[in-house]
Structures are given as structure tokens and as C-alpha cells.
Length: 131
Image (cartoon, rainbow, N blue to C red; front, side, top):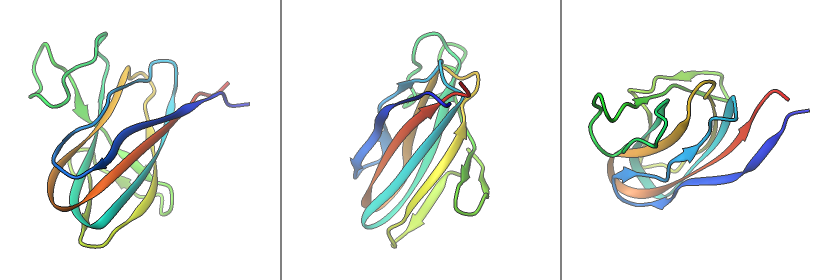
């Protein structure tokens, strides 16, 4: 039986560019992420991960002391992999999707809105392991 965690909100109706709330994920192997936009959203969201002991500043540039990267997610509707550097883009039509991220080995998870001209986005996560 899989052990599940509580639901975490990374972005809550985020209507600007910027980074969400970091989640400590070390004890889990997979994350299922819900993605929902509102108000004819036109934006891009990228998911981020890190193996640093302390949470990196996901809103700051990557560096030797602030190590993180964009991570791939898989769309559970189509099975399509979405490259971390590309992210999930919506253009004027609201979208509701579910993704899976392989977080095996990561310590921190976050998401950031990198481009936005309209609307908002909410990202929630539920974490799982194989036990």
C-alpha cells in the first residue's frame, strides 16, 4: 500500500510571475500535481527541484550555492513528457490537468510562473512512496 501525504498548495491563484511555496519532499518518490487556471489565463508554469540540504531560493538565479533546476513532468491524460525548461503553457483558454513528477532523490519541489499576461494558476501536490 502506498503511503500518501497531505495535500500541499504550491501556487494559490497566482496572478503574477513568481515562485510558489517550497515543499520538502525527501521522504517520497513521486508527486502528483494538479494544475488549474482561471480567468482566461495566458501564462507558463515551470516545475523546479533541488537536492540541497536547505531550501534553495527558487526565485533567484542558479549558482554553486543555490542549486536547483527545472524538472520534467508527465501529463497523466496523454502520457506526454513536458520538458522542464519548456514548462506548461496556456494561452487564453483555462486548463485543468494532472501531472506526475518523478521526485526520487530530490529534497525540494516548487513551481514558478515565468511568463504571464492574464489569469491565474493554482498548483497542488500530493506525495507518494512505494510502501
